[in-house]
Picture 1 (cartoon, rainbow, N blue to C red):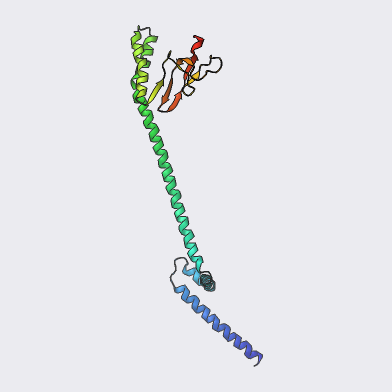
Picture 2: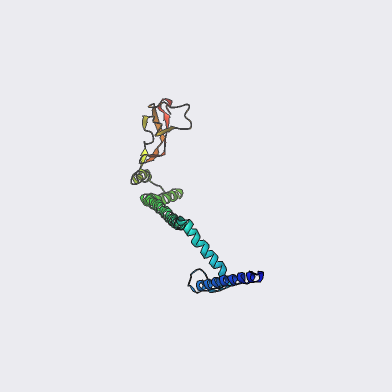
Amino acid sequence: MKKKDIFDLFGSFAAFFAGIGAGLALAHWLLPEKNNSKSERFENPEKEIFETSDSLQDQVENPLTATNDLGLQKLARENDELKKEYQRLLARTRESEQEMRDQERSALFHALESILIQLPVLSERIKAGADIPVDTVLSLVDMIPEKLETLDIKMINTPGQITEFDPILHKPVRSQDGQIPIKEQVKVIVPGFQYKDIILKHSEVRMQADGK
């Protein structure tokens, strides 16, 4: 076969494959796809043919790749949903805590409302020189522990009370010298307060032996 005939034969093969490639590109361009526009198919049809071929080959060689990708996408979506749900629960918890604090403050105010109203009035009357009976002042003061008990706040001991020293409930006054032994007889100088099992303020005491 002459050299010219060989070149002609190769030229015919090239034209044949070029025609097949153009036909496949045209058919692929005519198929509706969501992610590619017609202009992109028209501009580079050979690229799409090679990419489609590579994708099919990858699925044949790695059949689990597509499944793994879908699984990862699902996990990512579930993770995002869990994060959003956590944020919603966290916000709701904070709102609930704030509501509880507001309710506690409101209950405390209403329990002490009468005292909080009367004390400033009593103070102004005393400053103005009014002759206020001692019983009136004492009755107002005595209301405080009673009102606090409605909130489960109880007074620990009373001023002047003689009791045994308990480090959980008591602490020495600042003027007390040295440590006070447990169960030592002490005198309550300033009462303490507790809320249920929580000590809010220790009673301040002094050793009875001091005689003060």
